[in-house]
Length: 345
Image 1 (cartoon, one colour):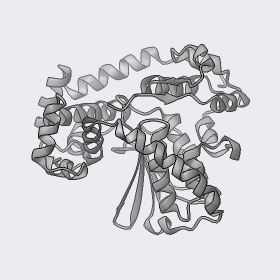
Image 2 (cartoon, one colour):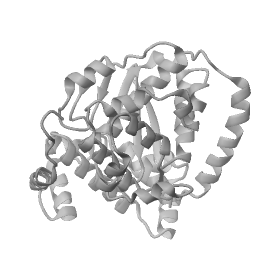
Image 3 (cartoon, one colour):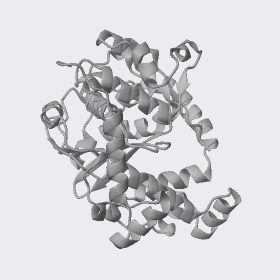
Image 4 (tube, one colour):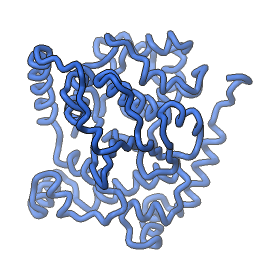
């Protein structure tokens, strides 16, 4: 199975320090020892990384910090995946490079779906078992648009930004992204006009790419060899939970196998297709119930259930309660643990 390791960037902590945030406070609030930063290659789990971003949101002096972190990086602060994308000939190739080379940093996927004249761009964390922190989503989306502006020389205004969370800070987000922001969406994504994928980048550097890309490709190939069939099926299932029934034939096609071969290989790995589908549905249901105002009928549709009763029965088997009671209990627990900001924060 792909290791759940997210690198800790010292550049990141230097940047938040310049924005008035004490890195040690953020780490301790997230339950991470500050001593980890002294390691040769510091890293945390996905859960710890998300806790760090939530802690940042609790102590940051400005609600804009996620957007600023994504859009105000200096050239020397960009990582190799972003640099490889920056020197692509077009936005489509930049996204393809980003999708390939982000795997070197952590188990994060970049997905681009083209449909009805739109290109819908998502960033998914393979090991995420909870909703993504709001600041992290904003930072990633702001960084994507900043990449396009750096590469093409012109600002990209999305058709819309869709967020898997309740409505909050709408004016701030609309002002930054320059477009409509849709809340309570089934997933977090930036939606652009399909034609923008052909947008040319103005600074392709063939010499740098010839030097940089072969080494990155070799590293990615080595990383992919350690990825298991179960990982691939999990990722494919999460991509397919979009309001349509999920068929094993689709998942088998996604991972390049026949349904029978897929089932046989999963069995050898001690897993089953149905168990992995239930796992993906359970995780997605919990995220949508916790982070959005979507009704249970809408969530059942996203998960591919034929009717609401089927979803309710499945959820009872997973959590020993109904979806609405689980949502209410989760909100009460969050309200109790939520820190109180000082006046004027």
